[in-house]
Amino acid sequence: MELLDKRTFMCEIENTPSASNFIVAPLTDPFALYRQEEQDGRTIYSAGFPSYPANFSRDTFLAGIIAGRSDILSSQLEYSAAYQGKVKDPVTGESPGRIHHEQPGAQLVGREGLYTTYNACDTTSLFLIACEHLADLDRFASDKFMASKRNSIESAVEHIQEQLDEDKFYRECPPVGSDMYSLRVTYWKDSILPNKNSKLEPIYPVTYPLAHFIAARGLLSASRMLNKRSIATIASEMFANGIRNFIRPGGYMVYEDAEERVWQESSDELHSLAYIPVRYNKLLPKTDILRRSEILKTAIGYMCTPSEVAIHLSDGYHGDVVWVFEQALIYYGATKFDMGRIATVAAQVAPYIGEGQELFKVIETEVGNIEIIPKGNNCQLWSVAAATYFAGRSALAKRSLL
Image 1 (tube, rainbow, N blue to C red):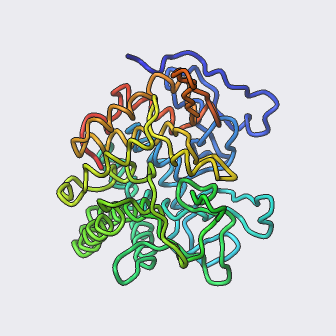
Image 2: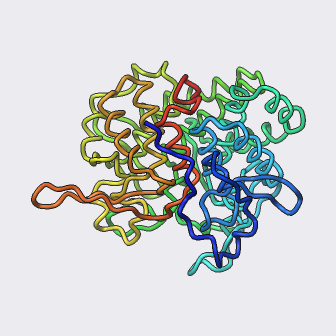
């Protein structure tokens, strides 16, 4: 079944300030709508059309990985390396080696004086994963990048290692001079904490287990790119300690900050499987993971947060909603660990993606009917990547690359 055809995407581009930056072309390539040409002639990809004029490293790296697109990865690696952090800046969140979240950064209402520029704790890890993934997809492009940007990779590794505590847990903390970021949460669920007691942001330092596993996978990628076994040893310790401490038979830990640990069902647990190597299979309490997944299950995939928690959240952007791109990674991870029931549920989103729908709210009525309500942006880069993946047109769908 072809989930993406060659029709023109039904997105409004008139009267949009950023629309003139986009290269509009017949969409034989479903990603062409998202391609932008910078004033310096550099080509990059937009995270969403037309609503995302800035560049987002996370969205673009994940889109390239999920879709198996070397052109997306190569252009984003070059762009992210160009803006890689060099100093510690409490205003933007910049730190040496850190990869940007949003370039240019923005100021948010109620958070004036701070910028979102480097407000992501997972982009540096994804930068490293993208480097390895590019090598699998296009050796020439990879060799070219490594020849000129090896220092960028080493700097990214140093940044991640600086965030590790004595037990090799990956902890996030703003640069000296600030006790918060402009964004309240700095991994991909970057709205508010999934805390039913109205707590919006962590008391730093904070550990997000999903970001921890992505960081471990990033170091594993770096160890292969740099041929350094010592980095692989650190990654191995992070995976083992992370599973034992965050993915327990009795529950999954969503986050731990300076004042509390929160244990509850979360799509993060299922998402983490995409980054954990299969050799850790025996450490995973798979029966318990499957049991917890039932709380999050909908007719078209897994919601981010249980409904009983989401109803208390003041921002439902990552509440009891199904994010399209995440279903591709959940499917990939579940398949890797022979958890077919989870993979089957995640794949149910495929017919609903359309031109790149961002997320859905799924409501079951009292008489048992299912109502599927599109939410968010309807033209999202990483959702198009998910459609490519579920259609079997991605290298990630054909062989194990994570």
